[in-house]
Length: 441
Image (cartoon, rainbow, N blue to C red; front, side):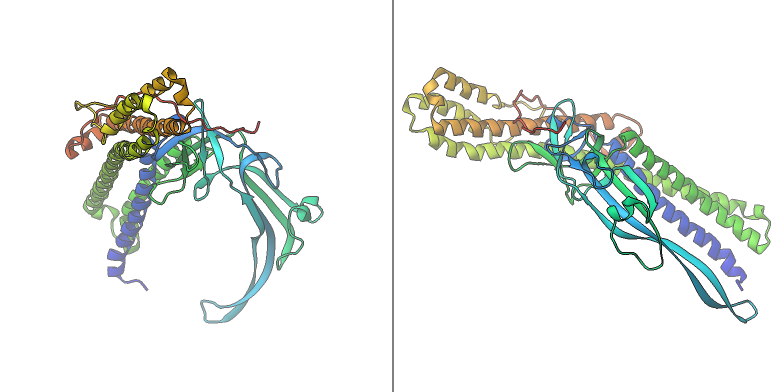
């Protein structure tokens, strides 16, 4: 039997525990929603290094054929479950201490076969394509096959195993999930540089806050997180308020006698909720600012890479006496830029020197046929493309960061934290290395 102190303190404490759980999972859903809203949608030609958000269609050079639906896709997963049921007899003790027996029926489903394929595929938008490595991602595919049948159906043994589980009802459910070819996709994940060409790809990374590949739209995904956030907030409040009402009902006390305590605990609940939301928004803004700083560091890294690359390339052309002066002059200009000039500060930028190198080749056709100089051109072109990609990505994340700290409610947090707008860079035009793929029709 429960005594009065247990009722008086235990029920509100249990209600507070449940509300804390609701707050935790509500905040987690809200954090994911704000993460989706904190990333600008990039084009495939503007992706460099870091967390990115992309929208396009699923494409591949060699389309897969799904196991059950036999449809063309870029990813699929299938499962076969067998139904079973059994009657169980059990012994129990009733309220009078008498030993009794009863029977009940148990039923369920057991997975008897499963499989699938998840090779790399391409995301295509109106600007180009980018490779996606789906391994390790949270994938939200479409259900392309869902059928339950008995032994008489050719599907039962044709796509399922020959044996049977214990207590089988000889009914099986065949389900298949897939990303169909040309299906619109939403992708959020970590971008990295490919090993084969100067281009980016999306792949799993432990440092990334989320790696999501979904057939749902961004609005549907964010809306789901938002609904979870608000529903758990309301349920948490109900747990706080309801615990006092339940306690009063069980102890036979007038429900209005604890009104002051109910109001105080409700205010405390919303104060904690408000502080938690502010903490999440602040951390989200800090993450966006860190992405701006990381993207700026990427620019610096690529410039230092060029600084270290140029001396070795200079040696490859020093034997070309007739053209040495022109080539050395342009290479010296490139080498002089060891680090990037911060946006908004005076300084020279020699990113436009590559066209001058090409002009030297046009002026002296024999030079262009030399193998050493051809390699020099290729290395310089790839290097300048990397630099331009880094600048483009910096401008993307910096523009979004500037918009965030000027909008409500982020503007108040930015003012309290002393966050300032980031000056953008003026990037020169460049030619991205073409990603040559022959997509399936």
